[in-house]
Each structure stands twice: as C-alpha cells, then as structure tokens.
Image (cartoon, rainbow, N blue to C red; front, top):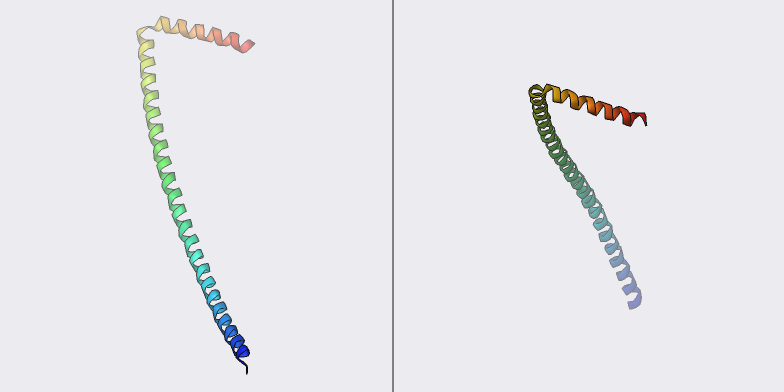
Length: 105
C-alpha cells in the first residue's frame, strides 16, 4: 500500500471518529436543550403564579379600601340628610329636574 493510500485510510478513520463525536455532542445538546426548556417553563409558570397572587392581593386590598370609602361616603351623606332634610329634598328635586330635561333631548 502506498503512503498516500495509508494517509487516506487514516483520514477516513479519523473522520468517522470525528463524525461519531459530533453525533454524541448533538445528542447531548438535544438533552441539555430539553432540560433547559423544561426548567424555563417551570420557572415561567412559577413567575406567573406569583404574579397572579400579587395581583389577587392588590385587587383584594383595593376592593377593601373602596368598600370602606363607600361606607364612609354613605355615612356622611346620611348625616347630611338628617341634619338638613329640606335642603336635601330640594337638591334631589333639582337634580331630578335637570336629568329629566337632559334625557328628553
């Protein structure tokens, strides 16, 4: 066998080994990417759940404060009507008359 032929056979064997190494590396990368995707999805879901809890708490707090303000406004209005019933009646009549006119147009 000539030196050139031996060199080609040696290169072919080396190329096959390199190809096998590349195939193994690609298989490892696929596994790593699958694990990374799974971890990322889990982390994303945890972040969404945390965000939902924070939003729920914020809405609950806002609802509670709004209810307290509405109750205070109702109490203030009731006190005002009790102190000045005639004035309250006149204001209600005037507001009704204005709304009646606006609704006709």
